[in-house]
Image (tube, rainbow over the protein chains, first blue to last red):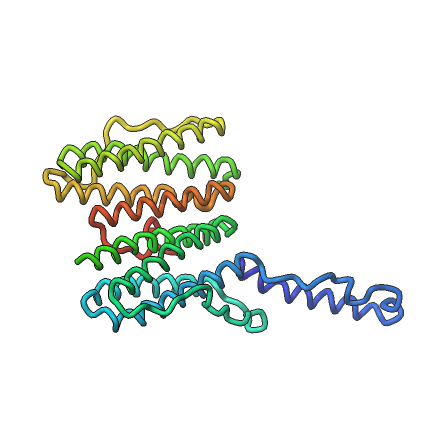
Length: 173
Length: 144
């Protein structure tokens, strides 16, 4: 639905602009001109939510790729969780289809994404902290999302909350 | 058939209630096969589900609907005769609770959606503690 809305807006704006232009310059002189259209509509909230969720998952995927080489003893767990983040990313990306003109500049995943510590316990702790933060962030985002997207975000948040347990277990083995 | 907002909310609450009722029943079986620390953990988890069940019951009643009554007995997904099987059942029960709250994350007001998501996260964490494996989309049969 977000896609439909996003695609419908430029068409509507184009139609309105055409109608006003056709009315002629004499008419335009006595009115506000293009300002009568009001502000250009912003990106719909659900699209913004999706973009933020995608940026966060991209950052997590990168983080796990970075951790893979650092933790040979727990490589299997790191790979399994990293693969789940890639699955999350894939399903989130599949929901966002925008015409190039509306595609926004990619959001930089710089919201507190740390560089990983050098020691094993530090790496696992940093990953667990990011998983916890991701679950909390998604909980806030899904509260305003359309039902279908909210369910997907809730499922991903549950997956990420559980990752903390697997990371802790890997740290104690 | 298109459901009204209230009907959809009541249906989502009923789904969560059914899952909590099943978990409350199932943990009785889980606990019967455990001892010591694991028994205490099962008792704690059982109490969590009973409290959640009672909360959902009150929410549904407050909406003017009739809460789905608990079944006398539930068909368990596996036969339990060892501590390991008991832990496996606990994992299944928790994943059932994750699925039970899913519809509620897309219904109701912001607070209710957040509550449902938090309950899903907590149940997924308990499933992992009981020996579950990582799942990319818990509660969703097929991600849409």
